Image 1 (cartoon, rainbow, N blue to C red):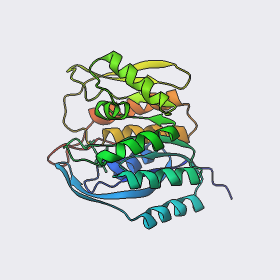
Image 2: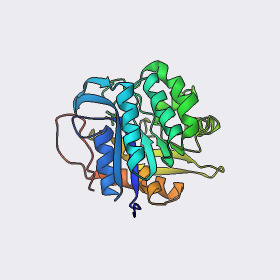
Image 3: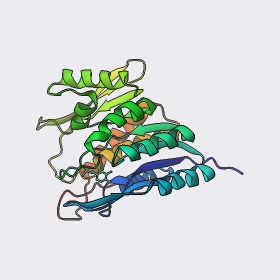
Image 4: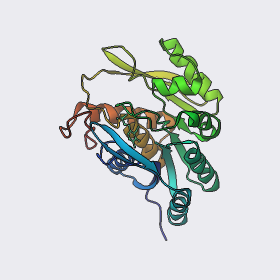
Length: 264
Ligand code: PLP
């Protein structure tokens, strides 16, 4: 039986507000013309104003979701998003090692824009030691890169040093996202590829607070492009362009940090 339509998997948390997490992942992947499955790690009660509550799912149900997906689909690429705590990071790691889901994009989600912690502090070590070495592409923002590389990032040179450290920790390709830096005019990401090629991706800063789910959208777009056979550099460049368009063409829903326009 032909089963060759590009298929992906997102391993992440839900967002009842529809703008981030698994919802952003599936919308992005749909838009990039791949078929996405999902293993839900945690359920959040959330809207554009913030995260009101969340609960991580029991291990048995997490493992069953993994085997349901693995038993029936030909997953070419997958991504991780919100993983909640150390135990759930290990559930993801163990299942990623058990099954063959192809390329892995790790979005090391830690804190939502509103300040809610989506990863327990003591799980950072587990992400660093266990998950990073499995990553084809790692996509930390500045605060996440600081935690994982265990350093302060203030300058462009610091971003480069952090990317190198994260690659030494085992992530094959790293994109350190500068969207959280202070520069009012531009947002620059530093990309370090396997083999050492590196470059900056710079885009003009858009004056908006409607950026909910930006990281999820980027990592999902990269994952979708990898599933379709793009090389890593092309996947990252496509992801950056997709997010830029989705931020520029934002839609007006919700009263806080609104979601992106995934069909931009
Ligand atoms: N909620 C979930 C479930 C997420 O995975 C993420 C992703 O990073 C967020 C919220 C955070 O979204 P943002 O920080 O872009 O508002």
